[in-house]
Length: 269
Image: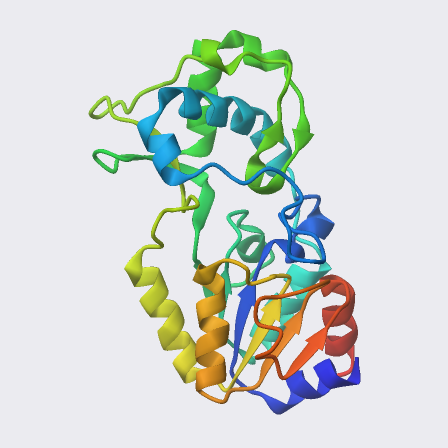
Protein backbone atom coordinates (compact mmCIF):
# COMPACT_ATOMS: atom_id res chain seq x y z
CA UNK A 1 0.00 0.00 0.00
CA UNK A 2 3.02 2.26 0.45
CA UNK A 3 3.29 2.64 -3.34
CA UNK A 4 -0.22 4.14 -3.62
CA UNK A 5 0.41 6.41 -0.65
CA UNK A 6 3.61 7.67 -2.26
CA UNK A 7 1.84 8.15 -5.59
CA UNK A 8 -0.91 10.27 -4.01
CA UNK A 9 1.63 12.34 -2.08
CA UNK A 10 3.96 12.94 -5.00
CA UNK A 11 1.41 14.16 -7.55
CA UNK A 12 -0.63 17.32 -7.29
CA UNK A 13 -2.84 17.02 -10.37
CA UNK A 14 -4.10 13.48 -10.92
CA UNK A 15 -6.31 12.44 -13.82
CA UNK A 16 -8.61 9.73 -12.48
CA UNK A 17 -10.44 7.21 -14.67
CA UNK A 18 -13.03 5.04 -12.96
CA UNK A 19 -14.84 1.93 -14.15
CA UNK A 20 -17.43 -0.57 -12.99
CA UNK A 21 -15.15 -1.99 -10.30
CA UNK A 22 -15.49 1.14 -8.16
CA UNK A 23 -19.25 0.64 -7.83
CA UNK A 24 -19.43 -3.08 -7.05
CA UNK A 25 -19.29 -2.31 -3.31
CA UNK A 26 -22.44 -0.23 -3.87
CA UNK A 27 -24.24 -3.33 -5.11
CA UNK A 28 -23.91 -2.67 -8.85
CA UNK A 29 -22.48 -5.72 -10.68
CA UNK A 30 -19.51 -5.30 -13.00
CA UNK A 31 -19.01 -6.71 -16.48
CA UNK A 32 -15.77 -8.66 -16.38
CA UNK A 33 -13.95 -11.26 -14.32
CA UNK A 34 -10.33 -11.15 -13.18
CA UNK A 35 -9.18 -12.37 -16.60
CA UNK A 36 -11.00 -9.53 -18.34
CA UNK A 37 -13.64 -11.88 -19.75
CA UNK A 38 -17.39 -11.20 -19.79
CA UNK A 39 -19.24 -12.40 -16.70
CA UNK A 40 -22.64 -11.98 -18.33
CA UNK A 41 -24.02 -11.71 -21.83
CA UNK A 42 -22.65 -8.86 -23.88
CA UNK A 43 -24.62 -5.61 -23.50
CA UNK A 44 -27.02 -4.65 -26.25
CA UNK A 45 -25.44 -3.04 -29.31
CA UNK A 46 -26.52 0.42 -30.44
CA UNK A 47 -27.62 -0.68 -33.94
CA UNK A 48 -29.65 -3.53 -32.50
CA UNK A 49 -31.51 -1.12 -30.22
CA UNK A 50 -32.13 1.44 -32.97
CA UNK A 51 -33.08 -0.99 -35.74
CA UNK A 52 -35.30 -3.51 -33.96
CA UNK A 53 -38.40 -2.82 -31.90
CA UNK A 54 -38.11 -6.29 -30.38
CA UNK A 55 -34.66 -5.34 -29.06
CA UNK A 56 -36.04 -2.15 -27.54
CA UNK A 57 -38.88 -4.10 -25.93
CA UNK A 58 -36.37 -6.54 -24.44
CA UNK A 59 -34.11 -3.71 -23.26
CA UNK A 60 -36.84 -1.65 -21.59
CA UNK A 61 -38.50 -4.63 -19.91
CA UNK A 62 -35.22 -5.63 -18.26
CA UNK A 63 -34.18 -2.06 -17.57
CA UNK A 64 -37.52 -1.14 -15.99
CA UNK A 65 -36.94 -3.83 -13.37
CA UNK A 66 -33.20 -3.22 -13.08
CA UNK A 67 -33.65 0.51 -12.47
CA UNK A 68 -35.54 -0.18 -9.24
CA UNK A 69 -32.35 -1.66 -7.76
CA UNK A 70 -29.90 0.60 -9.58
CA UNK A 71 -31.39 3.84 -8.29
CA UNK A 72 -31.13 2.66 -4.66
CA UNK A 73 -27.33 2.26 -4.85
CA UNK A 74 -25.34 4.59 -2.60
CA UNK A 75 -21.75 5.85 -2.98
CA UNK A 76 -19.22 3.65 -1.21
CA UNK A 77 -15.91 4.37 0.48
CA UNK A 78 -14.02 4.43 -2.83
CA UNK A 79 -16.24 7.19 -4.22
CA UNK A 80 -15.88 9.16 -1.00
CA UNK A 81 -12.10 8.70 -1.03
CA UNK A 82 -11.85 10.23 -4.51
CA UNK A 83 -14.08 13.09 -3.38
CA UNK A 84 -11.74 13.69 -0.46
CA UNK A 85 -8.75 13.60 -2.82
CA UNK A 86 -10.52 16.22 -4.95
CA UNK A 87 -11.27 18.31 -1.85
CA UNK A 88 -7.56 18.31 -1.06
CA UNK A 89 -6.88 19.78 -4.51
CA UNK A 90 -5.09 16.71 -5.89
CA UNK A 91 -7.52 15.80 -8.67
CA UNK A 92 -7.41 17.39 -12.11
CA UNK A 93 -10.55 15.57 -13.23
CA UNK A 94 -12.46 12.34 -12.63
CA UNK A 95 -13.56 10.71 -15.87
CA UNK A 96 -15.99 7.91 -15.18
CA UNK A 97 -17.05 5.16 -17.53
CA UNK A 98 -19.97 4.48 -15.19
CA UNK A 99 -23.52 5.70 -15.73
CA UNK A 100 -24.62 5.49 -12.09
CA UNK A 101 -23.94 9.08 -10.94
CA UNK A 102 -22.44 7.81 -7.68
CA UNK A 103 -19.25 9.87 -7.90
CA UNK A 104 -21.24 13.10 -8.07
CA UNK A 105 -23.52 11.93 -5.26
CA UNK A 106 -20.40 11.38 -3.18
CA UNK A 107 -19.71 15.10 -3.56
CA UNK A 108 -17.27 15.28 -6.48
CA UNK A 109 -17.59 18.21 -8.87
CA UNK A 110 -14.89 17.79 -11.52
CA UNK A 111 -16.53 14.76 -13.14
CA UNK A 112 -16.99 13.84 -16.80
CA UNK A 113 -19.54 11.10 -17.44
CA UNK A 114 -17.86 9.57 -20.47
CA UNK A 115 -20.73 7.21 -21.22
CA UNK A 116 -23.59 9.40 -20.01
CA UNK A 117 -26.16 8.85 -17.28
CA UNK A 118 -28.87 6.25 -16.86
CA UNK A 119 -30.92 8.86 -14.98
CA UNK A 120 -31.93 10.58 -18.23
CA UNK A 121 -33.74 9.44 -21.37
CA UNK A 122 -33.73 11.19 -24.75
CA UNK A 123 -35.38 10.89 -28.14
CA UNK A 124 -32.90 9.70 -30.78
CA UNK A 125 -34.82 11.66 -33.42
CA UNK A 126 -35.34 15.14 -31.92
CA UNK A 127 -33.21 15.05 -28.77
CA UNK A 128 -36.08 15.87 -26.40
CA UNK A 129 -35.00 14.78 -22.91
CA UNK A 130 -36.85 13.51 -19.86
CA UNK A 131 -36.01 12.18 -16.40
CA UNK A 132 -35.72 8.43 -16.04
CA UNK A 133 -38.43 8.41 -13.38
CA UNK A 134 -40.84 9.87 -15.94
CA UNK A 135 -39.94 7.06 -18.36
CA UNK A 136 -40.49 4.52 -15.61
CA UNK A 137 -44.00 5.89 -14.94
CA UNK A 138 -44.88 5.97 -18.62
CA UNK A 139 -43.77 2.36 -19.07
CA UNK A 140 -45.82 1.29 -16.07
CA UNK A 141 -48.88 3.18 -17.26
CA UNK A 142 -48.74 1.33 -20.56
CA UNK A 143 -47.78 -2.00 -18.98
CA UNK A 144 -49.39 -2.46 -15.53
CA UNK A 145 -48.05 -6.02 -15.42
CA UNK A 146 -44.55 -4.67 -14.81
CA UNK A 147 -45.50 -3.72 -11.28
CA UNK A 148 -45.05 -7.18 -9.79
CA UNK A 149 -41.82 -8.08 -11.57
CA UNK A 150 -38.43 -8.53 -9.95
CA UNK A 151 -35.19 -9.97 -11.28
CA UNK A 152 -31.49 -10.47 -10.64
CA UNK A 153 -29.50 -7.29 -11.17
CA UNK A 154 -26.94 -7.06 -13.97
CA UNK A 155 -24.47 -4.25 -14.79
CA UNK A 156 -25.69 -0.73 -15.60
CA UNK A 157 -29.29 -1.18 -14.49
CA UNK A 158 -29.91 -4.27 -16.59
CA UNK A 159 -31.60 -7.36 -15.14
CA UNK A 160 -31.97 -11.05 -15.87
CA UNK A 161 -35.67 -11.21 -16.67
CA UNK A 162 -36.76 -14.67 -17.78
CA UNK A 163 -40.40 -14.82 -16.67
CA UNK A 164 -41.77 -11.99 -18.81
CA UNK A 165 -42.62 -11.98 -22.51
CA UNK A 166 -40.99 -8.74 -23.65
CA UNK A 167 -42.76 -9.00 -27.02
CA UNK A 168 -45.92 -7.86 -25.24
CA UNK A 169 -44.30 -4.66 -23.91
CA UNK A 170 -45.84 -1.42 -25.14
CA UNK A 171 -43.23 1.28 -25.63
CA UNK A 172 -43.86 4.98 -24.99
CA UNK A 173 -42.84 7.29 -27.81
CA UNK A 174 -41.33 10.77 -27.63
CA UNK A 175 -44.09 13.20 -26.68
CA UNK A 176 -42.51 15.91 -28.84
CA UNK A 177 -42.12 14.05 -32.15
CA UNK A 178 -43.22 10.45 -31.69
CA UNK A 179 -39.64 9.19 -32.03
CA UNK A 180 -37.71 6.43 -30.31
CA UNK A 181 -36.66 6.91 -26.68
CA UNK A 182 -33.25 5.73 -25.49
CA UNK A 183 -31.40 6.16 -22.20
CA UNK A 184 -28.79 8.91 -22.36
CA UNK A 185 -25.95 6.41 -22.22
CA UNK A 186 -23.43 5.34 -24.84
CA UNK A 187 -24.30 1.82 -25.98
CA UNK A 188 -21.71 -0.63 -27.28
CA UNK A 189 -21.07 0.26 -30.91
CA UNK A 190 -22.08 3.88 -30.34
CA UNK A 191 -19.65 6.81 -30.46
CA UNK A 192 -18.82 8.75 -27.31
CA UNK A 193 -19.76 12.43 -27.87
CA UNK A 194 -16.60 14.20 -29.11
CA UNK A 195 -16.94 17.05 -26.59
CA UNK A 196 -16.58 14.61 -23.69
CA UNK A 197 -13.54 13.00 -25.26
CA UNK A 198 -11.92 16.38 -25.92
CA UNK A 199 -12.64 17.57 -22.38
CA UNK A 200 -11.10 14.41 -20.98
CA UNK A 201 -7.95 14.56 -23.11
CA UNK A 202 -7.49 18.22 -22.21
CA UNK A 203 -7.68 17.34 -18.52
CA UNK A 204 -5.17 14.53 -19.01
CA UNK A 205 -2.75 16.93 -20.71
CA UNK A 206 -2.96 19.24 -17.67
CA UNK A 207 -2.38 16.43 -15.17
CA UNK A 208 0.92 15.13 -13.85
CA UNK A 209 -0.21 11.51 -13.29
CA UNK A 210 -3.06 9.13 -14.09
CA UNK A 211 -4.91 6.81 -11.70
CA UNK A 212 -7.24 4.06 -12.94
CA UNK A 213 -9.78 2.87 -10.38
CA UNK A 214 -11.79 -0.29 -10.99
CA UNK A 215 -11.48 -0.61 -14.76
CA UNK A 216 -10.10 -3.40 -16.91
CA UNK A 217 -9.73 -0.84 -19.72
CA UNK A 218 -10.86 -3.52 -22.17
CA UNK A 219 -12.96 -1.09 -24.17
CA UNK A 220 -11.17 1.53 -26.22
CA UNK A 221 -13.10 4.51 -24.81
CA UNK A 222 -11.17 4.16 -21.54
CA UNK A 223 -7.98 2.50 -22.77
CA UNK A 224 -7.12 5.44 -25.06
CA UNK A 225 -6.46 7.65 -22.02
CA UNK A 226 -4.06 5.12 -20.51
CA UNK A 227 -2.28 4.86 -23.86
CA UNK A 228 -2.00 8.66 -24.07
CA UNK A 229 -0.64 8.85 -20.52
CA UNK A 230 2.05 6.36 -21.50
CA UNK A 231 2.88 8.41 -24.60
CA UNK A 232 3.32 11.44 -22.33
CA UNK A 233 5.62 9.35 -20.10
CA UNK A 234 3.21 10.08 -17.27
CA UNK A 235 3.10 7.90 -14.12
CA UNK A 236 0.18 5.50 -14.58
CA UNK A 237 -1.20 3.50 -11.65
CA UNK A 238 -4.19 1.15 -11.64
CA UNK A 239 -6.24 -0.23 -8.76
CA UNK A 240 -8.04 -3.23 -10.20
CA UNK A 241 -8.75 -6.82 -9.28
CA UNK A 242 -7.40 -8.73 -12.25
CA UNK A 243 -6.11 -8.13 -15.75
CA UNK A 244 -6.27 -4.79 -17.52
CA UNK A 245 -5.67 -4.02 -21.17
CA UNK A 246 -2.95 -1.58 -20.11
CA UNK A 247 -0.95 -3.93 -17.87
CA UNK A 248 2.18 -3.45 -19.99
CA UNK A 249 1.84 0.34 -19.77
CA UNK A 250 1.35 0.65 -16.02
CA UNK A 251 3.92 2.16 -13.69
CA UNK A 252 2.37 0.19 -10.85
CA UNK A 253 -0.66 -2.04 -10.36
CA UNK A 254 -2.55 -2.58 -7.10
CA UNK A 255 -4.68 -5.72 -7.19
CA UNK A 256 -6.87 -4.88 -4.23
CA UNK A 257 -10.40 -3.76 -3.50
CA UNK A 258 -10.80 -0.15 -4.63
CA UNK A 259 -12.36 1.10 -1.42
CA UNK A 260 -9.85 -0.56 0.86
CA UNK A 261 -6.82 0.53 -1.16
CA UNK A 262 -7.90 4.17 -1.50
CA UNK A 263 -9.10 4.55 2.06
CA UNK A 264 -5.89 3.11 3.52
CA UNK A 265 -3.68 5.23 1.27
CA UNK A 266 -5.55 8.46 2.01
CA UNK A 267 -5.30 7.83 5.74
CA UNK A 268 -1.52 7.93 5.39
CA UNK A 269 -1.30 11.10 3.29
